[in-house]
Amino acid sequence: MPTRPKLRAVRTLPPPVRLFLLSQLAFNVGFYLVVPFLAAHLSSGLGLAGWVVGIVLGVRTFSQQGLFLVGGALTDRFGVRPVLLTGCLVRIAGFCTLAATTSLPGVLAGTVLTGFAAALFSPAVETGLAHEGRRLEDGGGITRAELFALDDVVGKVGSLVGPVLGAVLLAVEFRTTCLVAAGIFGLVLVLNARWAPRDHGTVREASVSAGWSAVLRNRRFLLFAALYSTLLLAYNQMYLALPVELERATGSQDALGLMFVLAAVVTVTAQVPLARWARRRGAATALPLGFAVSALAFGLVAAATVAPAPGWVPALAPAAAFVVVLHLGSALAGPVARDLVPPLAGERYVGAHYGALASGGGLAVLLGSTAVGALLEPGAGLPWLLLAALLLASAAGLALASRRPARPLTG
Image (cartoon, rainbow, N blue to C red):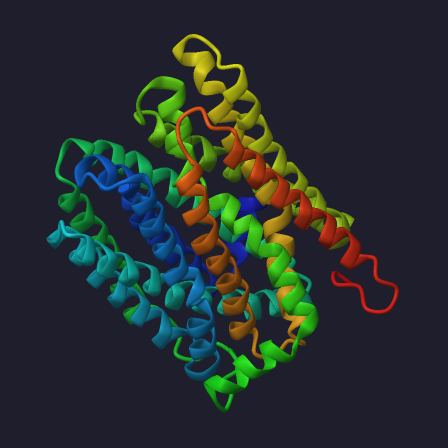
C-alpha cells in the first residue's frame, strides 16, 4: 500500500526535515483557516464589488508569490532559521491587522502582511528541504522530488484541517478566526525558535543582489518560470473562481469548505504515487501532462455553464470534478518542477531561484486575477475557457522547450 512507504519515509527523515514538515503543517492550518473564507468576508461581510475582491486577492498572492524573490535571496544570505522566524512574526501581525479593521486600506495592509510573511517563510523551508533532499538522495535515501511530494502531502493535511476549522468558526466573527490563526502561527514561531537548527548546510552567499543577478542571467530558468506561472494562476482560482461556480450551481458558497477538504484528500492519497510516476517518466513528460490535465479541469466547468444540471448533488459535480482534476494535474507537475529548480540554478543561489519562480507566478496571479475577477459571474464560461487555453499554451511551450536539441529545458 502507498501509505506505508510514506510513513516509513517520514520516520526515517532527519530531525531538521521533520521540523520543517511540522512547521509546514501548522503554517498551512493557520493559512487555510482564513484565506478560503476571505473572499466571502470581503463580498458578503464588507460589501465589496467583485472586481475589488479580485484585486485584493491578487494583491495577497502577489505580495506572497511576488516577493518570494526577496525571501529567497534573504535566505541565501542569512540562512533558513532567521528568515523563517521573521516570516512567522510578520504573519501574526498580518492576521491581527485583518482582525482589527473593516476598511479597504486596512484590509489591504493586512493582506500584504500575510502575503509577505509567506514570501519569507516558504522560500526558507523550500531551500532547507532542497539542500536536505540533495543529501538524502546522494546518500541513497528518498529522492528530492519525493521529499517535495511529502511536503505537499503535509501541506495538504494542513489545508484539510484549516477549512474544517474555518467552517466551524463561520458561526463567529471573522476577526475571531483571524485571531485563532495568529495563535497558530505563534505556535510555529515558538517551535522554530526553540528547535530550528542554526546552521544545517544552506549556502550563505555574499550579497542579496548577487542572487538576483544570477537569476536574471539564467535564461533557461526565466523561460521555465514564465511557463510555470500559469499553474499558480490556475490554482489561485480555488479562492476566486470556485466560490463563483458554487454560487452558480447551488445559490450559495456553503460547500466551499467541503471542496477544500476534497482537495486535501486528493493530494494526500495521490501526491506521492504520482510524484514517483512523474520522476520515472521525467520532467519532459510529466510537466506538459500535468498542465494539460489542469486545463481539463477548467474545461469541465466551462462545459457545465452551458448545460447546468438540476438538483444540489448533480449541480456540485462540476465543482468537485474541477477540484479533483486540478489537483491531479498539480500533483503531476508540482514536485517535478520544484526538483528541477536547483539543477537549473546550477545548485547555487537556490533560494533566489525558488523565490523568482514564485514571484513570476505571483505576477501572473495579480494580472490574471484582476482580469478574471472582472469577467467572473455565475454562469459565465469565458473566464474558464481562457484559463484552460493559458494552461494548454504553457503545456505546449514546456513540451517544445524540453525537446530542444542543444540545451533542453528539462534535461
